[in-house]
Length: 506
Ligand SMILES: Nc1ncnc2c1ncn2[C@@H]1O[C@H](COP(=O)(O)OP(=O)(O)OP(=O)(O)O)[C@@H](O)[C@H]1O
Ligand SMILES: [Mg+2]
Figure 1 (cartoon, rainbow, N blue to C red):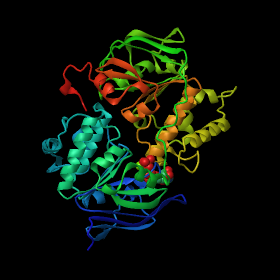
Figure 2 (cartoon, rainbow, N blue to C red):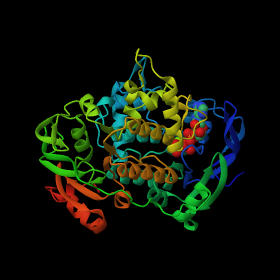
Figure 3 (tube, helix red, strand yellow):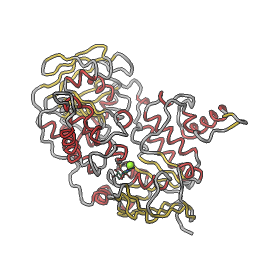
Figure 4 (tube, rainbow, N blue to C red):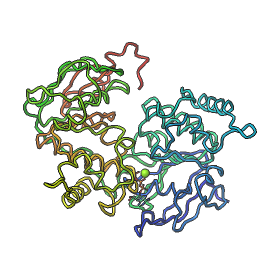
């Protein structure tokens, strides 16, 4: 009898001859949170998919409470006490929340699905987890973060002994993250073993009991969280000390590039009377609490939201960004926050996904696409962003989650934009690759491009921006010089227009 709940021993897995897991192991104790860490493409999701019966391993053994098992598919895993929240949301958005939770195991009354029992069960589940959603709502009416909460509720509903959470917080609001951590603590106190995957260091230190690190498909080690600090984890992940977290800010903001005058959006959530100036070669950060209108602001600038009033000037000339097409023509690019659900063409290859936003520029005189230059540009992106892939021909759905993100960031950089709007550009990206992306952003600013970057990671805003604009309740609360500000000042600005401070989601 083993003294742990779950054991994974000597697991190996290759895809078309390339080894992505090489003899790795993991032991999870009952009533603990075990974090699985590693750079993008290290093999974390693949390891969990082998456990869950999605992939068949080449070799390796699994034990649950001392009994050897090998799940043939996810249904089999769920029936035997292992459930999983996937990195990619995989839901039927035309169906209701309830349908999605109970899919394949509906409560029945004779031949019929017992809708009432299903509704009741969903309500009970949500009450237990502190989720305030009507189970009869269709999924496509929900925000990505609400959909992620539904997935978490579903995983919990199986009353599993082992729950795998693969980047569960990637789109959650701070409040929802708090709720998830409360749920995790309750599950842990009931003896559930939780495998937690995340690139957010603060979360790792908050929830983990133990940490296992993979690097390039190899097992590096397992440590109790008390014996670890951030440097040590990064060293295990990357294989060396990373040194500085941020590259030097070598860009020098010049003359005024864009002037935004009193923009107000037509539909809610409302952006009201926002005015500011952006210098050429400047990196302007946007901070604020969840719901303050950060995403809405960049979407308005890009023409993805209708303006009620207000003007945008480029180099003193008034422009009209009323549609995305027009703003691409005005050399704007927008990297959306929900890029994985809205920006990917999963069954196409990397080249297609990299060049799609820019496809016109590859058309020759007679309208044929210039394959060679598309390939060349794609390969440059793969190098620049260190995208982990065997070749540019790989289908994007076969890349790890973080590497898919990098392809989409690269896509917008290829459009040769003059003004880059980046919404949470480093979400889901590992610590090493974050540095590369910061460097790319600073290089672009050095070349005279202007960057607006929304981020909920304060250190990152302070690390690479020149100024930070703080949004509060749809309005601009102030702009501060990054070198002269601090977190308290930014926080106070973020609270400025809140009618009632208890509404703040912190
Ligand atoms: N179905 C597949 N076909 C081919 N290669 C794959 C497939 N799934 C994963 N890979 C490759 O296996 C490697 C490990 O990917 P995996 O998704 O396990 O990484 P990860 O550690 O979860 O990374 P991330 O932090 O980016 O999510 C990657 O190089 C990826 O491209
Ligand atoms: Mg993954």
